Image 1 (cartoon, rainbow, N blue to C red):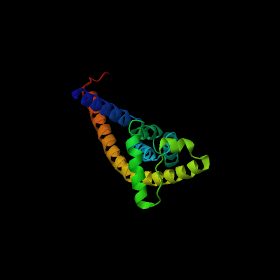
Image 2: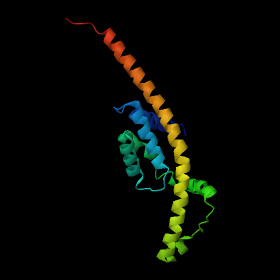
Image 3: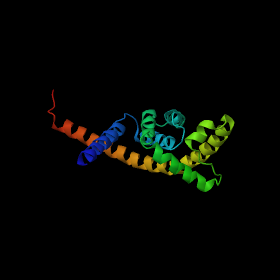
Length: 169
């Protein structure tokens, strides 16, 4: 069990360093990551990264950070995230989407399946917006602070190194 926590800690540190070492202004990195987190809350599974990159391009956020930000929502946790987003969306849209068994799903006419899918997609998208906006705001401020602290510490280390080096000439 301890081994899993060590791996999680290493992955967290690696992810942190990967973000703060991006060569860009801190505000751009924070905005890009926040836009990626927002896009990751949307139920468009294969389009999340494209949405994040497009938003970052339009809003002048860092594109690399935006792409990295979408990975909080990944295939390992979709089964947990999307039902929660659906339940959150249902609070604001009281339309009910009937549960389908696999047998019903396979035998349902295409038109009815698409009609039910659109309801589910709209409710889950609304839930994604409702959850994504505060998540993005928190991500922006936490990331901005982390990147600024990292850049300050790096500048101090660089200055110390320059002071210790003997001058030539």
